[in-house]
Length: 131
Image (cartoon, helix red, strand yellow):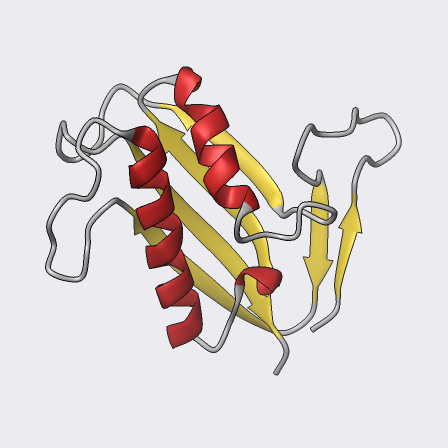
């Protein structure tokens, strides 16, 4: 799969650790928001955003593999956090799985709450896989 990364189109400042535009041709894979649950549905990392972020990215990886994709195919991540101070820990976990030289397009949103109070973040992904 060939993806084109446009770090900063004319008139747009470059992102810090993300790409402004990513394009590709192929089959779209949409991964629902993942939370820090293990395969049995138990919370991983109560009160620990770094542990929760690692579990969330592990879950995203499992979902991507199920669709025949990898993190190299991800064109967009959307991160939902309860506290903007969590973003460095989320970025550290993300940087373990993405190509930091060509990161996906990304959005980070601070939310008032997730579906259960113990969860500190949720992340969804879009990927494009060659047909």
